Every structure is written in structure tokens, then in C-alpha cells.
Length: 238
Image 1 (cartoon, rainbow, N blue to C red):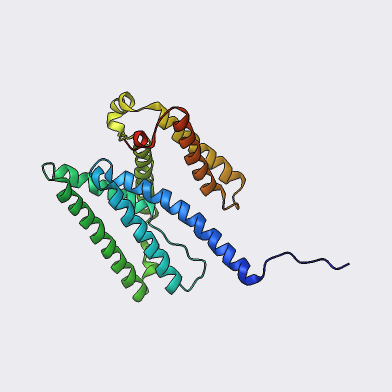
Image 2: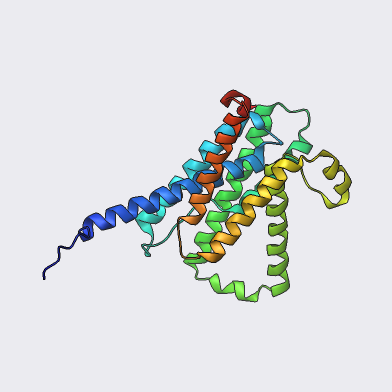
């Protein structure tokens, strides 16, 4: 008996898969860019938080477009990385401490210029490494140096995540002050979110919908809880 093939044609199937991947990547990118901007600017230039989110999203779009046009591998995916964001947060705090009496406009201009110059110089360095085929030089970097770098950036991301979740910076030398200032509710919610994401990604490692699904579900639950408790959108903005 003949059966009708209900599957989509290859061209339409490719379009559907591409749009699905773009949607997932867009959700992840948006949440990541908001987190990076929060990490860098909430303690230094909160007035320019929205501006930097827009700049990060624009940069992420530019990276994706450049990769899609010039990459030799069709599956390449690029975005703003978390490690440079953590280092940029340290740069921003350093400028805020140096320019205590400066206006927010001047402080933002200095922080943005430093981040932009470091980005340009990093790009030039990568171009030179690729042009002269010097990528193998990484083999001569000792493992303790790489391990120390990864451990330090991991610690910056960990403390940055706590700061984004609670609004309070974590410093080991001033742990008692952190405990006295921190609100345990957002810290607990962030921990629950992390554990749920860790368990689900560990159980379903090949399911690409886990991370964006958890992010969307957490946003919906947060808004529903806020509405149930009587908070308006304006209250949440403040």
C-alpha cells in the first residue's frame, strides 16, 4: 500500500531549520547581551545600560553576518564572548575608581573607548596570527599559565554572575560585608535557575531547546509572579 510522504521538501525544511536556529540563537544572544551589559555598567554607568545593550546586540549581529558571509564552515556561530565581558567589567570598575569626579558622559566615553580599542587590537592580533600562520605558538604557553588564566576568568564570571543576580559585588576579603548586604531571595532564585539548567542540559545534552526554553520559562514565571504580587512594569523597571 502506498503511503503519502508528509515531510516537507528539502528547501522548505532547510528554511524552517534555519529560522528555528536563528530564533534560538536570538533568544540566547539577547539574554547574554543583557547580562553582559548589566555586569559592565550597572555599577559604573547605569544611565547608559540600554545604550550598551544595543551596542552589544549590534556587535553580535555584525559577527553573525560576517561569519555567514566569509566563513568556510557553514555551521559557524559567533557571538560576543563572556570572558572578554568579565574583563571589560574589571576595566569599567578601574575607570570608575580613577575618574571619581567625572560626569557619567565622560566615564562612559572612556569605558567605551577602552573596550573598543581592546576589541580592535584583538582583531588585528588574530588577523596577524592567521596571516603568518602563527596559531601553533599556543603550544608553547605552559599549562599552568593557561590554567591560571581560565581559573581567573572563571572566577570573574562567577562573581559577576552573583553581582548581576543580587546587585552586590562578592569579594573574599570582605565576605562578611557581602553577607550582610546581599538579598538571599534573588541569590536563591539564581541558584535554582542554575541547578535546573544544569540538570536538564546534563539529561538532554542534544536537545537544543533546553537553554532557550528554560530562559523563556523563567521570564514568564517571573512576570506572572510579579503580576500576582501586584507589581507593575514601572515597579519592575526601578
